[in-house]
Amino acid sequence: MSRIKKNNAELKASRPTLEEVKFIPRIPLSILVENVRSVHNVGAIFRSADGFGAEKIFLTGYTAYPPREDLHKTALGAEKSVPWEYSPDPMETAKQLQARGITLAALEQTSDARSIYLTDWVFPLCLMVGNEVTGISDELVKLADLAVEIPMQGIKQSLNVSVAAGVAGYEIARNYYRQKELQF
Image (tube, rainbow, N blue to C red; front, side, top):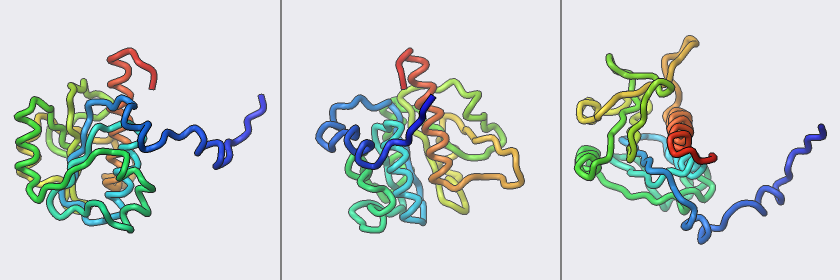
């Protein structure tokens, strides 16, 4: 078998435009980002969310939000393709989502956290991620309907917040498509 890597022009030719992406169905998964310090992590979360088809990103607290050139540099335009909104109050945003029947999943290591690989996901869902050092605030963890974690086998106990959001987001998307018997 001959396997030839696609070049940049071929990759760009198959990419939908910003107008076309509005008509691509998104999965009922949003991400609440609480007090993430690094604008580069925020940009990377946008890029992953665009890739797995998140329906919205909620940027809260002191998390950076568009328009920002440094965020755009990492997101590579995904901040224009993924719907988002900013709120200074993470708790108010989470409570509003919960009141709309959206399951809140804290991506956090807690005493009762389940592996993302062993979780029965209920949609619509909001995955909550937090600060690079302190994680999700205790208040949001208590409000969450469930806590989930990414199993770690090495010497480190956690992943970078943007990497963790991407890993969990793709696993949730895979489960959503499997539940709906759709191709991903």
